[in-house]
Image (cartoon, rainbow, N blue to C red; front, side):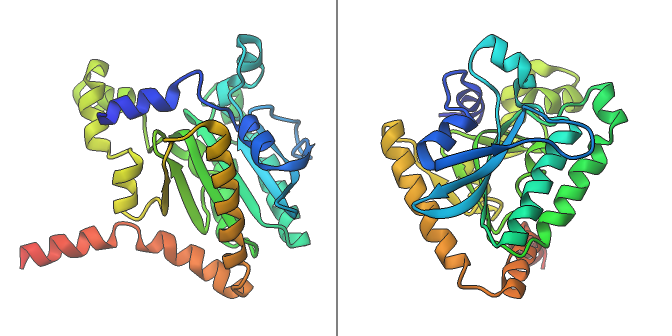
Length: 267
């Protein structure tokens, strides 16, 4: 399967949405609303649930399934209040010592005029900064599209996992082709150069684990839930200082192996 084929698979309208992951993995989930500043953004859903009995804060981007639902949720492209809601729930989780689990499937944050007027860039930047210092375990799973800052605003985590047929990139292949070659039709070439597949991103250290999609959804969810639970137990063995340092160093290391290889080749 080519890189752009993975993108198409990630965009498949039949792909499970964030709320479907929630219902399959968490029990007793209770949704919490609002950013306490402007309003509630349906494109991001968050709340409290149980993972194998463990109380966690769960947050996801939600694209919706029906046409009406997709429009209501803005096709999973969040406004600033969505990111502020997510951050409010993360800080709440930190206060009560709950692990944070995020599921990401979005083409990117909403880039309309009203989003910019309400501080879209600042909202995402605050999430990046605050997530880096959260004193609880954070795991993010890229389940479909992981588009630009819209995805990264929920992905500054101790562990970033990715489904086999998901895509994670700073820009869409169409957008990249339009900028580089002034021709969006070259999207397949762009996808190859972007290195947006799970396998390539794992080699670069951007993704920690690739989740194979070779089983039925119910089996996959049972395995994913078990893996999340086990990983959280490991992360909870770390002190708060070790946890934040682990997260900081994870992002500092990204790309360093490739730089070292290039330096050795130039000597």
